[in-house]
Image 1 (tube, rainbow, N blue to C red):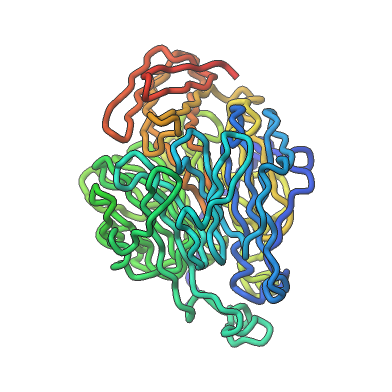
Image 2 (tube, rainbow, N blue to C red):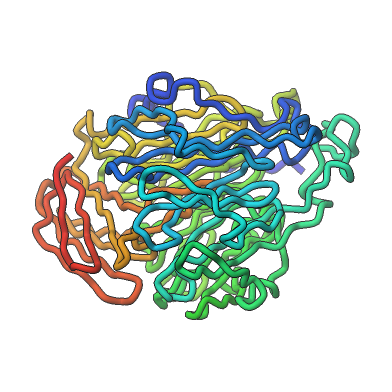
Length: 551
């Protein structure tokens, strides 16, 4: 039966808002993920990204996680090494020196960032097909791999991961999403296999392959971890094909919950019981299926407090032929509802296959917008009769006054087979840029020109916890120019990516001083009045002090 697509708003042309400056800012930075033919499911996820200030110079540096090839795997060779690229402060990146070098693992996937040993410096986890790897930051002078001594040497296919303080003891714990059990000797490649999609022979999976159980580790505060999947209750949860991970407080009880986007299996909500143990409540919370009660092929996750919502909203990117899902809460309901059609996000996504995503204020008008990176998994999608494409346009959705999202062209470039993406102010001008990674090929930097266009004012907030680390799980409320905005600090974001823990607020045309309220994870608050706009504000929990300066 033919089902017509719902009408979509015409695509608006905002190409000038974002400009691809990759040639100048990221020269020669590319990644590899298997062969162009994508004979195996291992070859389709692409690598990962992380934005954080690793060297302590107050700008955002970039980690690019690279993959491998089946030829290297069969030869017993390491995969391509992840790279740290240091920012010069103006958004130009150069490879870091030897002290920051990281050897290749088996096959790199994603990245997670957090201060795992409480020394005030962001550390780095690389997820892999193979053992995940942990690199401790040596006070801004380099990385030291500590995987085995940290207790993280188990081998699996890990995708996205997130650091969080699940048991509220002041140090970071770790949640790792895992995909499936992959053995190339037991699976036929696409060219000789039986898997079909729209009549075309394609790579096998995920359906028909065994999903891997996710892993949860309790941190000891010194950079070491203890596997706690069973004791936390995660062992009772049916494994799914895990791809995306998000941290949030879904029930507003002050602890951190975990949401997992699963590929072709129901999405899961691990609801924290306040002590680092979890109960799976995705179905009862309305977060397991789409609005029609169907499981989807979830990839990436965005999360933010949207205007009119009592709790943070969740946005999940999905497979082509499925709409992306926007889950919003209601003051009168415990559960969430898929409101993607109501807010203009259903129709524009039906023929796309979404991956990296994130909420951010692209045009500095005081409400949150959304980016979605797209690209198919099957090269066969480029053939006639597929109703979609392999390389696809990335999307920007600007939020309108009524809360609906209007599709824009993210940039004037060519369609890409995009995967991971992360947003942050990499050039220090006060608006938020986007770094995008393709399944193979160059890494792109899409520079935001909102400040050049004088579209609005802004405020940035950096949080410093009691031990000097950025305080993940802290919520910040900014009131300025008649707007009230809420943000939660976290580094989990999108798909196989780590976002900056610092928070960015667009303030519209208002240049009046702001009122800033910081609610720390232990329930204490810090209140600041008459905070100037167009500046970064640093708030320290230990001293209760704030400092800032104009950029």
